[in-house]
Amino acid sequence: MTETRSAASNSRSRLSFALLLTATYMVAEIIGGLLTGSLALLADAAHMGTDVGGLALALFAIWLAGKPANPSKTYGYYRAEILAALMNGMMLFGVAFYILYEAYQRFNAPVEVNGLPMLVVASVGLAVNLTGLFLLKAGAAESLNVKGAYLEVVSDMLSSLGVMVAAGLIWLTGWKWVDPAFSMLIGVFILPRTWSLIREAVDILMQSMPRHLNSEDIEQAIREQEDVQSVHDLHVWTITSGKIALSGHIQIVPTGDSDRVISGVNRLLNNRFGIAHATLQVEKEIDSERCATPKH
Image (cartoon, rainbow, N blue to C red; front, side, top):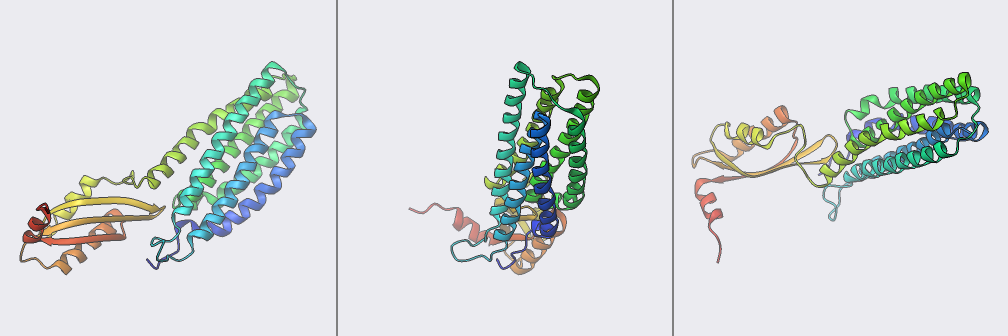
């Protein structure tokens, strides 16, 4: 395999800019949380911290995935992006549970919070997150690695909205319970989206059939090709986001042209199913019978 450019590599510069913005705001949010006494701001800052790590990890994975294949890693380093997405998901899980724990603690021991500065800091955070969403939205549709970073920014944006609402209520009413309540909502919101990211990454690492494809549909489409009698040993998996691979055995009629059949099936797989990397073994009837006979 000579192609080393992955879907995520198209978002490298946007990821870099999003990382700079997020890291800058994270520092401001930590300072704001400490000055105002707001758990919601500190929780959001911790969440921002995982974003900084996640974006940096995503960029590192893109660099690693760009390294060429070699005799010991024949597919190259594409899976580094999937590992990065999995690690991002696990970090988000940890942050969510930490936020829930801290919110529970504050329900038992309320802390005085300064609502107005908290509102100002959260408003800046919303602007930063909206910029990050704009930068990463297109890449998230192409790469699981970028999708992981994008989901982190989405959850941060909603966190910022929640913190703004909480800050406004605290400023107007002085209710101390609002801060841990909204912190808890942030934690609960993160969990299901994080689980979806982890599940998708694990599916790829387990070489599962891509969710948008169906093996029976692929097999039926191949069987409908001219001179094809049957299909067996069919396997479809994802190497990394945007790169789907297939292998299989195709039995053709004795008079069939193997090269023509392979060329036609490759076109079908690429045009209809988006599978550009296929390894196909063609067998004529006599070959498949010999293949099916057990050796003693």
